[in-house]
Length: 56
Image 1: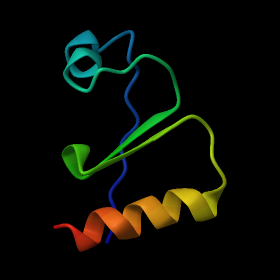
Image 2: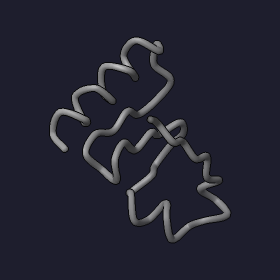
Image 3: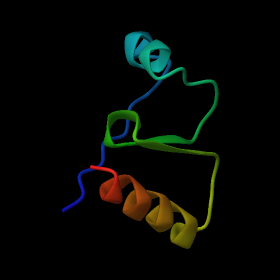
């Protein structure tokens, strides 16, 4: 099961600072287990999710 949330970095500066967001899109997976910066093909994003799940 995957849960996703979108956060406006300019409105939630505390979260942006916590995760060191410098641009968008910036996808944080499992509270920092993996990260994807920029727009990437879906297959790349799924691969990062899979790898993050293996490191649970």
